[in-house]
Amino acid sequence: MKLMSKEDIPAFVQAVIETGCDICAVGYDGYVIGDADLPSAKRNEVQPILRRISRGYGERDHLRREIVLHLRSLGRFVENGAIH
Image (cartoon, rainbow, N blue to C red; front, side):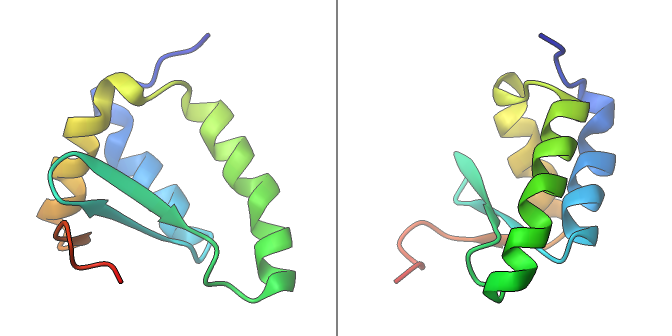
């Protein structure tokens, strides 16, 4: 399986943002890609695009902390406990 490289993080994040989905760090340990808040028709349109993005960049679990730090540097984060 392909592994995403650290250098791919900005492009990966930008590709997700360009779909219209929110992507943000949660605390310092994780991140979420939010397609659930999209209207149903848009969500159905975006999900295959997100799968292509994911496959294209490859496995990224090993870069979770680096992705989180990048998202935080962009101001795209919520603190733990801030989600209701």
